[in-house]
Image (tube, rainbow over the protein chains, first blue to last red):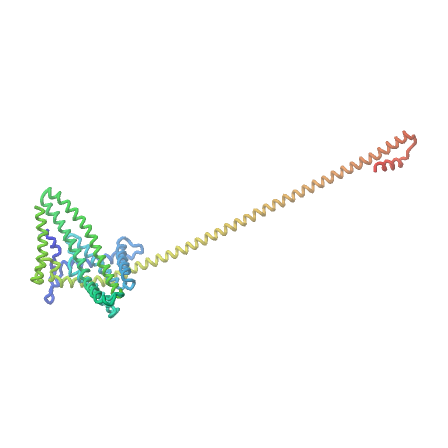
Length: 249
Length: 193
């Protein structure tokens, strides 16, 4: 099934591991997680190893990523938020590199699986909850009671706030997952048109030019989406962490 | 033909998706066809995500981020230092310019003084020379006047003698006597005065 646009999301076991009836196999997904982490870590490590006072091109990419995330976090959560900088930076780099690696033909996209994005989103919300209660105690619950709301409306507002808080991990994870999934399916469908048209001889090859142009254009768009989704994920993380640091709106 | 095959492919995909949903609903996690919703792969993905992301986080936190932060800090310090130095150098340059201008003003003043002195000296010298010449001229003038006076006196004396002689001879002619020389001289003198 060469043209099946879903096939690219298939998980295949490389090294079967089973513990306690659960399947912990090392799969293609695991391999690409390792690849993502290794690529991002090696890039950041190697490009900064010369510690140049005047940065080279690659070193300035690492520095730009650092300052980009640092200013994002400082703008959203203030200078107190900088304690979460390693966390936000790791999330941003992981999502970004996983998205970008997924754009290579035949590569697996780690972030196209809801469980991965949901786990990352839960990690963010878990950090917000744990840090919020640890830092502010029950004062953290003020997050759900905005100031200046008339007493009659408080139950309704609190309900809305709680629902919006609970929907955060879902929206955070589904946004990233759906973007990657939809982008890759679209790409695959248009690329599939190219191959199936080309099989039809001269007329088909001429007709295949259009979907080919679309494929190229969508590939460009997907690069933008890969970066944008990593950025959105990191920005929302910063905003949620700001709630943990300053619960009273 | 190709439209049909493409349609078939997407229809297959749609069918897979619907089948996945129904499959999950009816049979639980029993090998659904849509991989992202296949819960049998969740434990493996979660474990490996935890391992890889955890190691990544630790590596970045311990090694990479302190290093990049250090690089940026060193650069910021260096730039601030260079800016300070530049400001200091500019101040020095400004001071040098001010000193130069002061020197220039002083030199100009000095030049004016020297010029004035030279002018004064030249004027004094010229005045002295003129005085000398004038005195000389005056001396010559006085000399000449004296000479003229002497000549005049001499001439006047001669005039007296001639007048005496003439008076004596006139008297002699008119009166016919001899006139005393001294009396004639006295008469001439009386007339002359």
